[in-house]
Amino acid sequence: MNKGLAKRIIPCLDVKDGQTVKGVNFVGLRKAGDPVELGKAYSDAGADELVFLDITASYEGRKTFAEIVTRVAAEINIPFTVGGGINQLDDVERMLHAGADKISVNSAAIKNPQLIEDIAVRFGSQVCVVAIDAKLEDGEWQCYLNGGRVPTERRLFEWAKEAQERGAGEILFTSMNHDGVKTGYANEALAKLSDDLSIPVIASGGAGKMEHFRDAFTIGKADAALAASVFHFGEIPIMDLKEYLRNNDINVRI
Image (tube, rainbow, N blue to C red; front, top):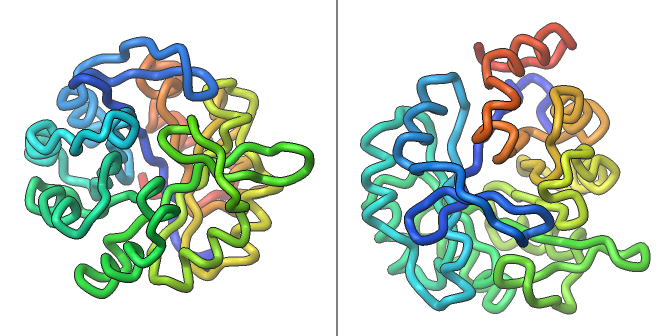
């Protein structure tokens, strides 16, 4: 991991039926607002990037809502990652055409790891973010499909390594144990991922207070930290967070 690069703060818009939603441990969703308005607000508030996930696209077999992507992209001036229901190169092309800078693949990549290579070859590694939803069970991090609904045989560390070898530009790791619980990120697993990999690791799942972001960067060695509800419901203003991190000797863009 390059210690010199600024750490990134990334709000995540989980979108269902055109509305931003947030749950706990991947269930119990509540509405958090219009994704276009939120995206613009975050871009204006100093977020480094934005992630937009159509959380039921894989599950319902739908394609990501390209129209919203276009509307969000028109309002923001920061890198924009889109995921959910991306199964083939045509989907990637459609999302990039709609205004995404990167795409995130999760279920489709586990089912067809060749997809990572295909995306990297056609569009460049920097476009391909491999998202991994994993749950710690009996001392092993097990990977899940379809928004955390379906367990797989894959294990977090070997799958992350394979994704990197196949051409992923970043790994977005969400701990399902920590998601929405606001008790901090899975820092031990993050640190191991950061040590194992040469590509950036994005921490996801567990942010509840500013210290959790600090710990993700210091203990977890993450390159970026993603959060949803603490931003959507105004619990942590992004600039306040960045000032706090800077005061804790963490390099962030202000």
